[in-house]
Structure formats: structure tokens, C-alpha cells
Image 1: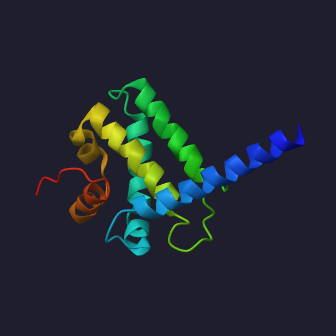
Image 2: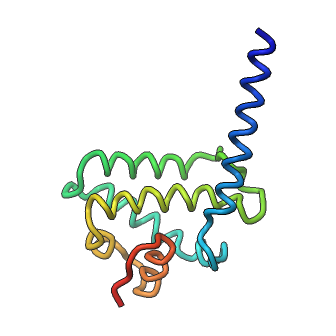
Length: 134
């Protein structure tokens, strides 16, 4: 029994370390934490507004509410006090969810609900690795 628990604990630690490496490698290139933080308020409003849009499928809206809950929780997979990668897990989760939303609802919904500047939307589209319409 003890051996099984040790193997399980070691497996969880290895999986967590693999996730940290993934976050470090998958973080958006040439993007500083300052750039991402500058977009944060507009991005949170975007997620909330899209989650309230009944023209978007219910599953997609539910996923956005789960995302907002995840971002509100103080516990993360990668602790925020770690430099560089501390906030990268949040950015990656937001990126994956917003890319899913764009696939389901279309890029027009992103533009429709964006309250920030045009430059901010362009930066968000680059961060999400979406095609930009200049």
C-alpha cells in the first residue's frame, strides 16, 4: 500500500514538472508580462461579455464561466510567485479557451465584444495566434 502511494505521489510530481516545462515552452513568444497585464482588464471584460451572449452555444458560455472561476481562484497549477512562468499557466488557459470560443462563435464575436483599443485587439489576436484583419 505504501509503495503504491509513493508511486502515485512520484507520478503526480513528474506530471506537474512536465506541465511546468510545457508552460515555459508554450508561453507566447516575444511577449512580456507587461504586455499581457496591459490587456488583462479588457480581456476579462471580453470573457464576461461573451459568456453573457446567448447567441453563443451554451457549452461555450459555460466554459467561459469556468475560466472566470479558475482565474478568480488563488490556487494555480503553477504558483504565481514563480518568475516568468507563474502567470503563464493562466495565459495559456485563457488562450486555449478563447481560441475555442473563436472556433465556435467566429472571430466577429471577439471584435463585437472587445471594449479596448484596436491596438489591444490586434495584440490579443497575436497572443491567441489568430489571423489578424488589419
